[in-house]
Length: 433
Length: 176
Image (cartoon, rainbow over all chains, first blue to last red; front, side, top):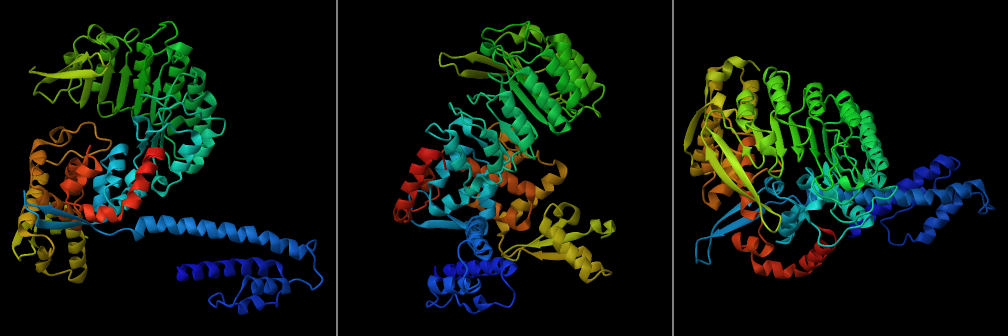
């Protein structure tokens, strides 16, 4: 503690000195004599030394005095910045002690073996856990707590929508949370599944808190953030590393999505959109065109249709548009279409499969994820045919007829049944080709 | 520096002094081996002993080193599917090939020693695999269960009760 104080004082001393030297007359240098280690150096003495730099008759109106007074907030700001820097450092380095694991034989009280795991390895273990599992792990012991707070554990992303927090978060709470050191290098975040209001400045505040963010999920799979077009555009502008956007169309419009696609252009790598029929939010054909023509680097395109009050005329995710998107985006690895069964049918899937299978070295598409509550099978008959054409597909997932071809060995089907609780139950059937 | 040197044998020496010879090409999965060989080359460029380097691994037990060698040999024939996060499934046999899933079917002490060995020898895929396997011990368990599994004494916990209570309140309020 005394050491830290001394260091802080020194820092204060240095900063004020340099600030003053710049403005005060050269030659007057009594500050150098001040000894911050010495306890007899009271604030009063320091004040006198500083005052002696000014002309004897100087008042608050004197320009030198004004500069001097203005220097203090700078000193304070610098000290605070250093403190948070030190805190981050100690989190990163200071806490890196091996974590000891001891093992007992059954029923015996004696420790049979103990292994010290270097913290970097333990962190590697932790990064395979998801948010709420990390919360549990952090409660095990002090050492575990300190490890779970390292930024490297959280780097890959935080999914707030999957119930890490028991209490509903508002924007202020979320921002407070994200300022914790462990989130400083966060690359992906899914916003909480609560009625959180983003507000006019929400995205801006998030961008300040998470400068490294690459993927921002406003609620593609589940969420209630209801991002507006202005939020999407702000995100595109304010997150320097952003390459992935996931959103629902409660408030966001096709026009907004098209604008974001144009604004982000080749920077956009991952785009997942959930339609919302209540607000007539469907992706338009024009927006599909905009995405296809502006975003050549797209690797993941996902669209989840809204079944309730579905309006086929508004839904612009047509088979030909999907095919055009695939053709325009050679880097596309995954195409995910959920409940898209009116405008896209087997002819389109086959066209995609044929097109890609003839150009395997130029087109990256290998994952096709198609979901639909029992309606897909007639529309996408014969997933086997697609498998044959695209034997390179690593993941062909047609739900209610889900198959996963491992080259030549057979096909695995998943039959999906929805229980009364709404949770799909999967039964696995394996069938040889 | 030059690639001609790839035919040689490297001898990995365990804590007990047992020697595990391994072809350099295979052993290069370990970045520790790569760096050590690099240093050897710098020191004596033109002698043939460079093809027969001994690498002491004084904190790796023979039984662990044997597993590591098995891993490296198998990796050279069938490279492991890279492990990516977030995990799509919790079935080890679906994340990596069956051989690798069977490979980590060992007791906990061996598992942790494999992690430390992989870390020390800097073998990235082995570290991924073993750390993933260790994370499966923790996944979905409460703090109490984790303490029981790893014999983290309740005594040390009671000393920290203050910290922990504060922490769990924090978790209620705001997450970790």
